[in-house]
Length: 263
Image (cartoon, rainbow, N blue to C red; front, side):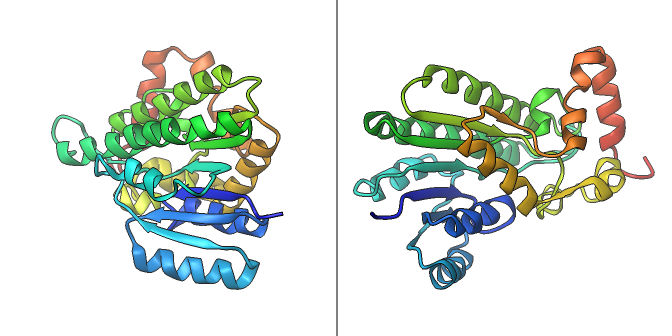
């Protein structure tokens, strides 16, 4: 029996890289998607050598509107059993004066639009086969507004809401949707968002899970058909904040936590 195939976006680093490695270890063939073709080819060689699986490289930039359709068209003869919508990034700073509109538009394109379109394209064949799993990487940020990362938090709230709704629509079809909601993770994410000196990062450094731990929880939740997975006790406690604190107070707390050290 041929191995099943998993598609992972943002597979060149961090959580996406770990998804690729752990799914390959479980025997899945991989389709690796990211902008960095060189890194993807190195990863493909590693996975093929170590786990004896097939690994296909698709170097695509998900900030481009047509990238999801190009990915789908390239895989028309390859049934995708697992779709991991992991690609995403953040912008840090005051919305009015510090962050760049271009960055935020690209963020919404990757975090929201590309994720939605890839789900739309690949879910129909899954339903027709009555088999498939979608993992959307959301965040603990999905559960409340986030001053100084306003657009990022809002984009992840979309991912969680969309995933929950789609999971319910697909109930009984043989296809599941899992929203993986990690907190701050040792993954390189903070460096790209230019927030390594935020109080949130410096304070929570000792509580951060590794990308490997996050992905292990995500895959376990996916296999169990869970709709929401919040890995780690610290993160599980954190997402309860909006339930017990008025929203106005919650935004003050988060803004204070996310301000740069010394500010």
